Length: 609
Ligand code: F6R
Image (cartoon, rainbow, N blue to C red; front, side, top):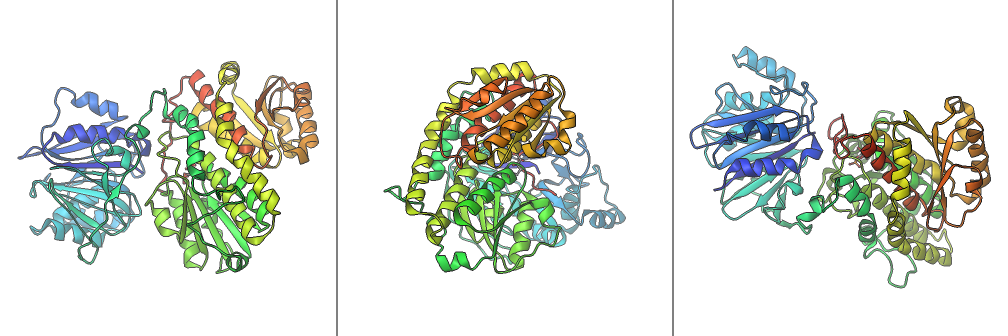
């Protein structure tokens, strides 16, 4: 997964390319490069490392020219290096290409091209595309690109530039995102909207198989068969600032603090005015439809999977339908039982996660009905699923997912209530009561965020521990899993979450004097049991930080510290308890001097297996 950009216009291409890439570094950041055509030659500049390394390298020698392409890389084929950084060119240097995705048949193509005398410079799959274009080029740029596309297999978004065709860029996509920004006398290409919104709000969101010929004054789009496509302009409604840090030191902190607004946006227009229930206009499901399923699968990865675990609980508890939750990377290879009586719900912030997309496609192929819960409009997953519920969280830039998780929880809760309303599995009064509690959540998240000082103190005190354990039962366990993932990924502290009742089956052996244990104890039905698990770890001299609802006067008697969250229905409390855990991870990472927004080895959008 990588970020790509392109520019053709009157301005200095390098300025947009570097600026655009800086907004796409969440897609990968192990090397970066740009290629600029100056009217005579193509100048390629690359550097391993962050974009800042490339900026430094070319600061005194900025390539001039008003057409160019750029790339920020997350290595798949070939380790991060100058040589493997994009853009890649053919032998003559006439054709240059940037690519996001994987060319699956690159090895056979490479062999064929080497036999024909082509000379390869890198270990990447992408370079074959440039050589192939050189090989098939017949003077017709678009026709030759089409020929290349017929030969390559895999997933891609690609931008082609050719010295032989000044003033024209060609771009296309298959299973990876691509947008075109429409300017005045200039046009922009990027993997994602944040790269272009400082320039324009008018965009074309490219669909699979579409090919665009982009000049400074025109964008002509056609499909694989060469038929012209009249695309509707998508007006971006986000502020330019929404994709920036907005005064916070890191995107992660900004996004944690955006949660009250984000969850409000998720709820907007989905709550019946009199508070009696939930309306999801996107679905229009009825009782017969819901009763036609014998099971629901929720499939996702990482944080979205953790949201799925909570979603299972909601749907089973409120709508009384059996739900299984699966990791997308496992689901697709375990021959799951799927037929037309299956409803598959995929959850994905980016809408581009490769395993989730593949699970969706496979389930569809086997006859399942499919619903996507995603944040990104027009994403591959959104387009593939039969129904889509958008979380409307706004762009999430930090690699560690925060507001995406809480908005996914809200949406899963509303979906479960919506189903319960249709199926009649809950009393009307109970639904109204839960809607009432739901409406209070944005303000309660704000309240939870209002005093971060104790969390900073905990982070400073325990930030240098090697291991941290998270325990809880029922919904608290699902939140514990998410808390541990957050801590691991941004602070590099080894963190594990356990169902509190499982401790005695092995993990208790790891609990020794001074080990921090974060214990969530908000679920009344298992409260006493959780307390006895807490006593077990306390008896081994662990340092226990409890997380409880305000008004709980019991927990403090057995733990070292308690962080309180506002009282709500215990179904909704994960939306509050996760907040101190996100902050603990954030301030833990700060204490250790970690690069919070770009944790090592990770990238925001995992569009490869
Ligand atoms: C963790 C995180 C990842 C993502 C996972 C799925 O903070 O962000 O675990 O949740 O890669 O990504 P999406 O939701 O885009 O499918």
